[in-house]
Length: 333
Ligand SMILES: [Zn+2]
Image (cartoon, rainbow, N blue to C red):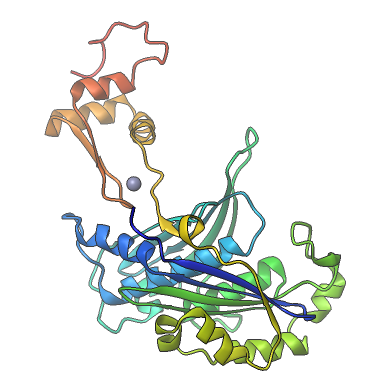
């Protein structure tokens, strides 16, 4: 077994309504990039796309570790520039997968808006998909544009997500995100709601909480310290060193870190059954026309690179009633 070395560290500021999380994804992130680079169809990401996707991986891991919720957290950016889609999914067990669709030239120094918000139509979506859904239950999704309240384009993913947290959860949040070809890392500092005895599973919307937005002196002081963290420090320093350097004057209680088997790791939830259902969704006519054109149906997973292959007999099986009483041969030839 390969040693899992990605980490999640949570901490509280003693006696203050402020908490934090620091994540460092190493092996999990490298595996995501390796699978992409070895895919013949697409090849490695341009550098700015790699770094954006890495920041998204770090942010989604931070958010998954910061909520009480048993399901997948999916962070998506829908772009109107050369990057059409970037998506990260973090499962409840911290299985992580990510992919981006690039359909144009990305300059080496491309900004966030040059990649995904050329015409002000880029969007960022956060979806919480419960592990077990009630019949008819839809996943929760929040969507934010990629500009601020003054309609200036945002150039940092962290700014987009801070804006989202304030709007959706009414909580002051500071995020520092960074990624390169080896590490995807992030620091989250959040003000805890004053009301509700710290029970984050309940509603956080209260007058008492709203009155605190932006004005809690403890949160503001700690947020300023957090925002002095440099990209290079976040990427290269270990967690102990980062926390000591930033918060040496504060009293912090740290929780047992998630490491080893519990730590973030690469994992893909694709399966032959899911791909079969997708082909079923295309309809028999579409499936038959693909078979007629190429002799088989091949579907590659964008996340992990696995290719699912369906020959004409496999494809015909997909459209048979599940009870299997209809004789074969009546479908695709
Ligand atoms: Zn897959």
